[in-house]
Image 1 (cartoon, rainbow, N blue to C red):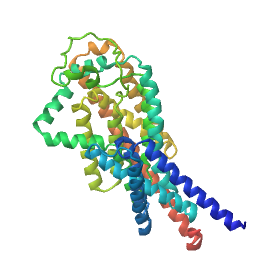
Image 2: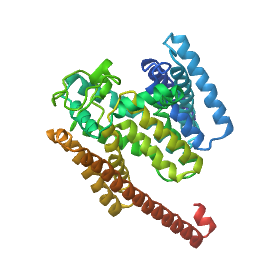
Image 3: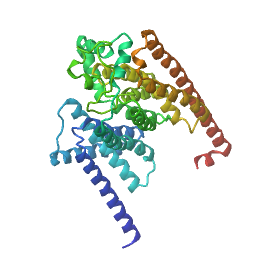
Image 4: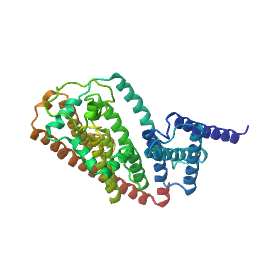
Length: 410
């Protein structure tokens, strides 16, 4: 066989392997009915669009997505069950089509245009696989949880956040529907905004922050494990929750995933909100609505305590500081120290019986103080990052002009 025959055989086998792997993943993870995993694959379509592909490549992605959908149906795997599952399932097939087209473009045309979007598109599926395995291992171990400590702090604020939002949902059913939809589609937003930034040439990488947050969140889960009020109080949530002092302050030993403290739902929503400041006003408006509805959903559906969401604020500062270490080391170290200090202080304090003796004014002072410290520092960090990026762009432009058009092109 001649050399070009070997090249053709290599490309054909590689292409077949890519398609077979995606078919196996599609069937094993039941992408037509597993809305969380499906969101991860749907994001690949956003990144494909964000890379400004040729029109024919998008058409091929749509055709390939339809092909995956037909194959899924022929496999007899479950599809749908709810409007959310149908929507995310269709999105997952489109994402599989985009993954196929981007991968095959690199194989057959040696194109480097899709390296970055493909790398970002794979973050969420790979993260979901690793996170699922890790959380299952911890859940089986069932370490004692600090839910009653977290609930005690919420009660000390003089309000019942979960019950209050649940009453709001009863009064405004449309708000509950909107919050439920946003909660279900949560994992679409990080990929959507990262792809939006990619299309506009923004140098930030939201998916990197997403993965860093997931790893750090898993570590912090082990410091102050918590499940969420709906899992601890069951049918007593939200209307019949115990009042302050009417229950013993003890560890909770029940079954369930210990993924409440800090709230990763709120963390990811805040990461999206901060990233939106690099985009147009429309992006900021949508991100604000997304963060607000996520805040309401986590409380109203009993998935988190209010203090879980408060701790997410300095936790996000820590995540962005870690991601900024390469480009703005000094500012990132300062911001990261504050974020880590505040986050750990909360986690360690909530493990102690001190939560049962804090007056209401002290609890609110801690909440307001945390936000008042973390938010300005995060604005300052982002301002320094923008300045650094702008200086780098000006330096690159000046270098290109000095070398001349031909050298700049090279």
